[in-house]
Length: 323
Image (cartoon, rainbow, N blue to C red; front, top):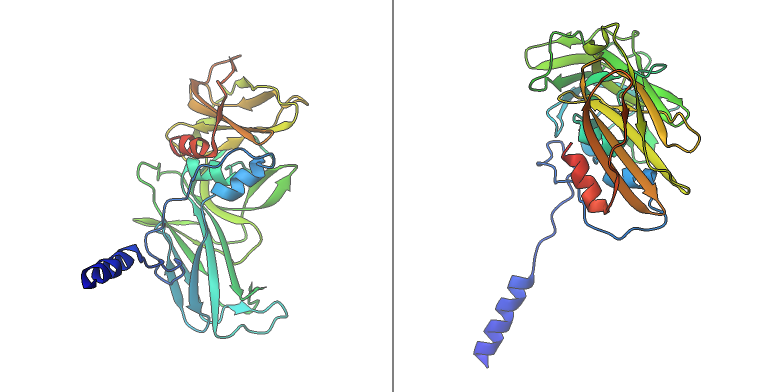
């Protein structure tokens, strides 16, 4: 009898497991891989819902508002806040502690999953980005705002990406602008120029602003008179939606195209002659996802029809992560 009792207790111990703490700390652990558990198609799986489910997750850090504070993000950026920098919305100084929310994007797959292309406002060109950032600070449910009397601004240090062309002059860009369904970046001339350091780009920014911030530069390949227009054809969808992107192979830039037909089956882009590019197509039709990708070299008068095929949510994320 004692033998069975001991065996039963051992089984209970083996079956017991500890739940991991949520990664909310000033120095968070290595972030987990974005979950891509399979799920069957549903009639309400729009592309907006797909983005909501699989966009990279934000990070959260607690910090003391009265102290000079530096936060190291998962992606290697450093964000420094002056002491007593934030106010409540009514203008009174915010006291005690606050919660910092940071979402950072460094790769083309993350930009596709978050639907955050690198298009300057008012053009169909693209930027080469060193990182896109959304930064918010709050106390409970109250968003804090920068103090108008602050003597200094928060500082953002962005790590230089390996293989990136560091000879290009980086600029600070802001994305508060939406044109139709597309967003565009504007240069932020009101703030000091981006400084190039040994391992980082350094920029000062107003934290908790509306929109996103990016350190980027215009793609140098556009500095040519040879900019032919290429046409992309995608399958017709009677009750669906389509996103078409193009990106330069080997560079961190992403352009989301505007359809040239009412049925969203034809798309155009003006690109540098001879550039090696990749088309990325993402569709949702009745809750079923479709994906396609094609690499090509820009040539005059070229028309492209990438192969688009049905995929599960899991496979859609996997294919995007492989771009």
